[in-house]
Amino acid sequence: MKDAEMPEKIAELKKQRKAVILAHNYQLPEIQDIADYLGDSLELSRMAAKTDAEVVVFCGVHFMAETASIICPDKKVLLPDINAGCPLANMITPSDVRKLKEKYPGRPVVSYVNTSAEVKAETDVACTSANAIKVINSIKDDEIIFVPDKYLADYVRKQTGKRIIHWEGYCPTHVKILPEDVSAAKKAHPGARVMVHPECRSDVIDMADAVISTSGMVRYVKEADGREFIIGTETGLIHRLKKENPGKEFFPASPHAVCPNMKSITLEKVLWSLEDMKPEVSVPENIRKAALRSVNRMLELA
Image: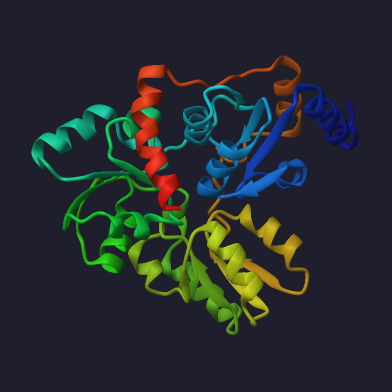
């Protein structure tokens, strides 16, 4: 089948299967273009909860499909590439969380949504980069365990004044954005505003005009008067920003900020997924129920 024919065939199959296609902002341009909904982790989680579709085709990484399965146990959740994982999520295990709780008894535990269902099941509330500050501020305790991203934890600590016990995890894609990259981009585009993701290194965050999630970047650009923007996150977001803001220009803070896992889903894999109704992602019921409490609190705060 020719590439040009695939979107049409996918649309036909999607209708037959009563499916909805959700795509993260970091996906390949052609995947973004066939999606029913684009967004960040929080937006897509909320959309999965709202949809009346029978099948959710999640074009993202494994923890995102798991989150959809946690929220929607009555729906079939498909991940077109079952090997699309998240290195950050893999940096912490349920055992690690239990050991932290033993070491710091009584402290609330916040899990970044970039974690497995098993890790979420061990925590009190989940959060995304879009609502991490809101989640932390909603907790009365002054000392909080936050897993697994140390850079997001540090940013939240500075913004909330809470004492954060963090895990030593990080996003391998965002740490590729270096201060010298931002300096070079600013020198090349002196009038551009710098937006960076809170998963970035602290010294990169210090150079930004705005520190926001990808959904925040989408809103920021639409509302801003400026015409040029330096984007300090995974480069896939630039496709959406260009598409939605044709009169503005966007430059990656670093061309190396590319997540291979986010780029592993192709049109062929989406098509095969709808044809075969697999690979399916489902969470065992005992883990799902425990993780759902954490995810529901996140959604309530959103």
